[in-house]
Image (cartoon, rainbow, N blue to C red):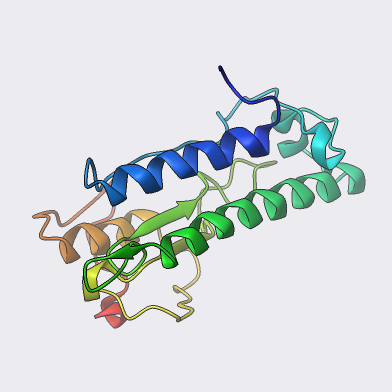
Amino acid sequence: VGIPETFSEHMMLMFDLLAVAWQADMTRVFSYMLNRDVSQRVYPEINVSEPHHAMSHHGKDARKLADLIKLNTWQVSLFAKFVDKLAKTPDGDGSLLDHSVILWGSGMSESDLHYRIDVPTLLVGRGNGLYKGNRHQLAPKETPIGNFLVDIAQKFGGEVDRMGKHAHRLLRRME
């Protein structure tokens, strides 16, 4: 009863609930934020005792950078377990992953400087055939993330031509 003791248990429980909600067709849309930007969460289960926000303002301190990399790698490994679960969960003529599109990312690329250009972003799933999958796409340097979001919205019939300040398209290659 209540919130699990470790963050990984909490995160995996949330992912399990999301998978069940998709499988039961209760929803096909979710938003799940792992950390608030100013989170003071620490991660004793992976031996990270520095608060997340303080780590993100690393000032090029090698220890803080190593812990931040450890944290990001660990969180992505838990996300990978969720993706694997979706891939193994039948859904109609495929899997939940075949019929889903999941955007995983961050609000910035260099947290120490609050840099919001070249944000690393992962798009997972085939979107019921809208995406080919199993590809790595590299956007031109300093491409705004809004361009990518416009492409996703348009693939699903959204009548948008801009998000934020930018009005041009980014990844026509995804078609």
